[in-house]
Length: 340
Ligand SMILES: [Ca+2]
Image (cartoon, rainbow, N blue to C red; front, side):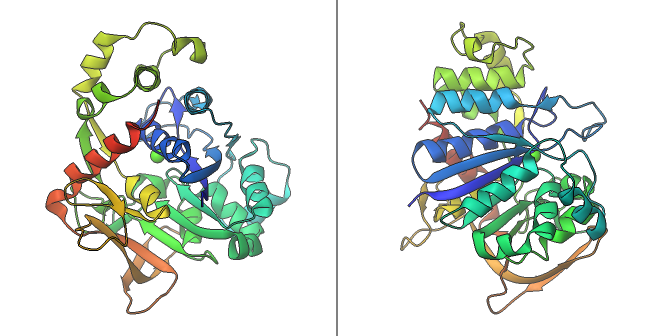
């Protein structure tokens, strides 16, 4: 059975952090292989400035259009609200008004019409999912299989970037009336290091880019190069910019969200970097999810502890920190090699 999936992302052109383009390609690879039914892409309204204080481009609708074209899909896009959720009252107010963008409508419509419960992946701001959950809790209770939230920090006091985008919205994730798979971006957001309760890993892009299909290479060149030619479709037919691909191949790419995409379809990654069924016997997975009790205040500060029993709340855990980075890199490569 294809798992219905909604993907929420802060993917922009020109990009803030192009890890979102890698994540999008992974989701489309799963859709192309028939593992998920990709119901829609909700793209954040661009924040005034990105992590480095630079302005962000507009929602990267060309990236979604390119992936749709390459994979033969017709996945719709909705743009998130420009407003900050901020409080329960404000969230309900935004939901009642006819806010422009369509992101909220796409979320609500997808859940409402779903025949099978939908899995939501958040790899950007939690804002639109939080507003939808506040306004339509029954939809999340009945129609949402799980929400995977890529934000926060397993420990420490530093507010991670995705949390800081809307701390209130992040806090709502811990009240959702459906299972929550919490994927802290860092074990401790004070340092960008691989750790037990953090999803962060990285690869050098030429570990993967040179092996991909020409169409997919051009999709990445278009994004990474912040190409201003608006002919996103024609661009896929133009000669490949080999020099650019080589130059950007040497750059490192910070990554976070991959494990959740695979976990959604019952898969894991072995210490050797092979994608495998989670319930296969004798394999050594590099990550798992463990039950926790967790709370988050309106300022985005979390407290949590391991739980003995099912709580409907899980935290991502790296089982083998030595193998995690190389294994996840291999997994991304395996996924993207499936794309035509
Ligand atoms: Ca992101």
